[in-house]
Image 1: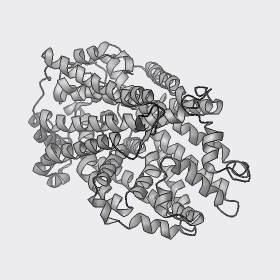
Image 2 (image 1 turned 90 degrees about the vertical axis):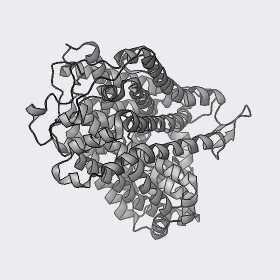
Image 3 (image 1 turned 60 degrees about the vertical axis):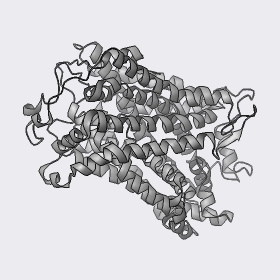
Image 4 (image 1 turned 90 degrees about the horizontal axis):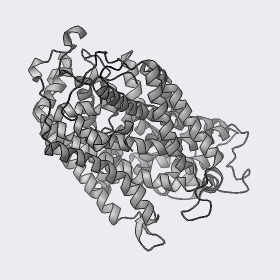
Length: 584
């Protein structure tokens, strides 16, 4: 799905051209708003359930070591590069990449399609959290065995909440009423948060980012008092060093931090483009966001493994077996533990837990939709340079984006919706994100120029930070460590895809992911990967064939240091006829 009716031909027409409007690009109301929005984007559901699950699967503390190495060597640098570039060009991803190396600017459209696919099922998953959150207000949790006829939390999730069916089952494509209403509620809250504009969203982010931290602290304080919590924490912090010699541990760790911090989605570029050109605290903001994202995962791991240790003791199972429960960790394992809390406290902690999940997910959803809005607004203003994006027009864009994606996401409210979600989540973000990250590293280091990128970072840094910017080391990381690391992850993922433990024989005899029908794997799984990648390749080929060139840029030495006034820098690095954005 291409946003705003864009086609490969449109992309190639845009490449190498610069169009500008006279209107000034709107700015963040405060530094805190920018930090909170990007922090909310980075900190999501994966920090609570996917990170602990990976730790449980790949040797506890050993996975943490690989995770931190991957953070510093691959994910964090790319995140910083994106924010610096977005701030420099004051544009969304398409305009930024066009100015960097026009023939490859179509890579931004891979991120567009990937974001659309992810949003449709991500909001549906949040709908599940809405259902559990609402049901937590009962005097006794409805998934307690006494309330559901002795069913397990897994049965309650699959049969009562999802009413799940397999492909080919009669009525498998029937929309489930409560899932539909939950999805509608999530999209309505998202729409409501975004129609007020960027500054309103920035204020909302203070609550949606900080309150989950408060809730996590409450859950942590309770979790560490549970019997067996120490066993879970011991597994979490004790590294099984044998896992560090296995390639799949490093592949999984690098993938996790890429998915958590999520460079290559376009959001970091879009959000940083709304800073003043004179803003000189961008690198400090990056440090805060990266550290808080990692810190939330690590701290959340203590709470999660305390709970896992308690449940492992109740079941008489090893900690690693309970911790590696996958997506069921949130809606099955945690749900079961919540029923075991003594003293009638189960409903209270259940409300806290699922409200925390809901807020974490909504934050990321807000940032995703705002990124798509930036794409659409920049596209509209490219086609209509004289058009002023008034608040009313921005509301229309938000409504259109939310409405279209809500309608597409309805497919995940069917009885087979959870299976479709599993397939989409396995393929699209994995391969598209890795592909875009690899292309961005090559584009930045070898097409745009590693040395030029270092100069851009230096121009963003305040004087006291200049001594900590080691140009040669950064250039080496851009040219070799980052691209090689991502290539390694991509190769390992492909090997596992065609010869891994996740392959199960389906009804046709083919070994596929999860044993799903071959048609579903090809159309939804690989289709959601091949379509956006083909989009990029077609636009690049056409750009080379038609002789599209990168717009001529001012040299880095022409830049004015960020300590100067806004009026002095108003035109720096903004070539004539450059598209400017409008307030999301």
